[in-house]
Amino acid sequence: SSHPQHSADQRHYTPMEVDNPTPATTSDATQQYYPSQPQHSQYHSLDPTSIREPPITSSCTSYSVEEVPVPTQCVVETVEPPPPTKMTQRPPTTHFGHAEGGEIVEGKELYTRKDLAIAGGHALEQKDVHGNMKEGADSIIVSHLERDLREGDGLCWLLFSCDRTNGGGALCRSYHKKRAIRVFRSSLLGGRFSAPYLDEDEDDEIGYRYDGLYMVKAVWDVNGNETETFPTTGLEGWQTFFFTRLPKKPLDAKDVEPGMQYNQLGLQELWGSIQKMRGVKRPKKFEIPPVPAKLPPFKRGAITGENKDRKAMAYKPLPKPEPKQEDDQEMDRMIVNTK
Image (cartoon, rainbow, N blue to C red; front, top):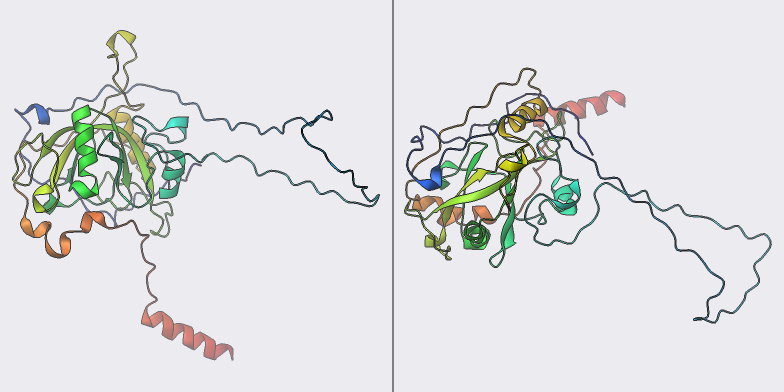
């Protein structure tokens, strides 16, 4: 279901982009991303299928039924089946590419975490990386990016760090197999690329926006070196994954690469939709932030001690704010006046 547009109130967002990055120049892993020109595309909504009862025949020979007289005053109640919903339940299997069924719209809708699990966008409601070591990761939720973990966001590129037990092995497998990964940005992300909250009045309903297909183009180890090896457990198992967004499918069939997966929106179209969702009346043209050409070694304090499990924290809704003491006193005065 569609959600209303949200205001451009930025008070809950803090920039997450990498400060003063080195311009991208040399490495193949950090090639500049060149967005396609804005083009028009059409979408077709999924029509719910009708539910039909099988016909009842009188020539049934497989069963013997004892006839029971029916009272003449018997009232038979007919129970209407519930109408089919847009989100249809699917098993949590690994699927690479856009979510099947067309229920997850790229860049133009907000979803709850449960919506993503039901519609096949991101099958896990508790972890941010879905996949396995054998096949790879097929989707990722971007909710928290931290500078001391060498993470950053440029919309068309993304830096995401984790260890083997929290999705690193699956992401590394997708890197080696060159498999596309669905990327969802959360309201908790912060910065100009985060998704709006579902409730524009109360920032307690986290929204998730589908930003299309990305692919891991490079992997860095804890020492800041590019690597091809799979992550291990422990402190040395942390890796940073560099994602780039796939382009929009060309209109000319001659320019379509065989076996290549494409997004439905170009980069400028996605950026325009993001600004519109946040209430920007005059969207500005998107300028690609510089891509870091090299990453520093991990700060040991960022992945040890109380911080060692920060990527393993299960998703939890924001706690409701406790009432202020002034509000309690005011409520007591109101009760006294009414007596």
